[in-house]
Image (cartoon, rainbow, N blue to C red; front, side, top):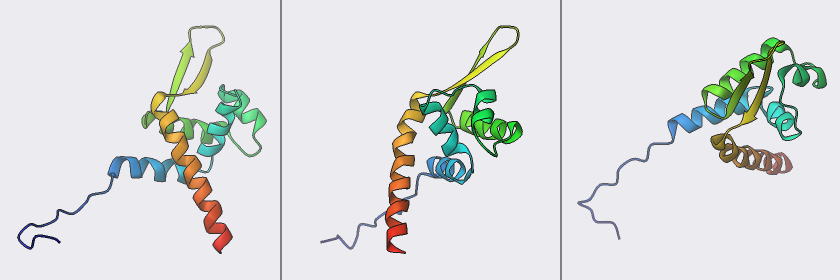
Length: 113
């Protein structure tokens, strides 16, 4: 039984992580980037070459957003020609199961509709 004198405080949702999920899932290419990284494709030029419809400009925007959230890390090598690679961070590895869960949930929703 709830004590009538005691008020229950409103629960505030996780604002930063909710924005992160919305941004990443809302990006047309983020999930593809994570798939590429899982397959060992970690250089931007190779990502563009192996993915139909992906442009360098859009890929760079996508990578930048993921870096800003701390999900990906950019590694620049001091070589000529310059070499850049991307890898999933520790936080990114914690985020991947959330993306998998959302994909599974979408599958269940699709079955209902």
